[in-house]
Length: 113
Image 1 (cartoon, rainbow, N blue to C red):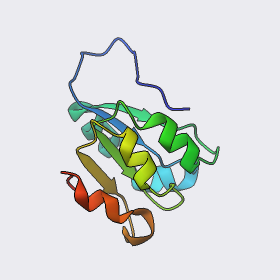
Image 2 (image 1 turned 60 degrees about the horizontal axis):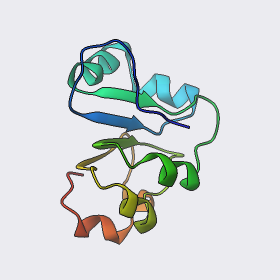
Image 3 (image 1 turned 135 degrees about the horizontal axis):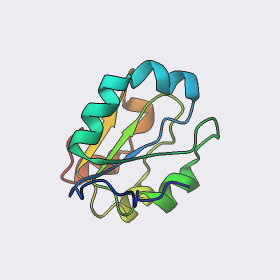
Image 4 (image 1 turned 45 degrees about the horizontal axis):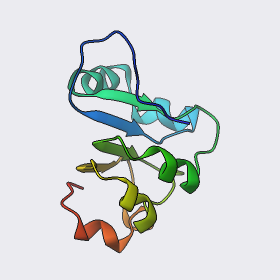
């Protein structure tokens, strides 16, 4: 389960959930420099590594996040999940096509893709 990070870092106003759970894929997509840049802009929460992250997990966790970054193996952001994503303003997909990961309902919200 992803949880909003309550670390001692300076409080930022943007919260990002990264749903890339595969360790190898995560290391390919998110270099140390990329991680530093993400963390400079946002509080970043990563789903548990090497534990598949399901649609139910995403639907449960998405509520408090402003941004969600996905990739291969991430669950589809369905209309049910979007109903719970009241703060969501940005969806990023690292590597590949967005088509299998988007629900048409996403285009009814004011989001950056």
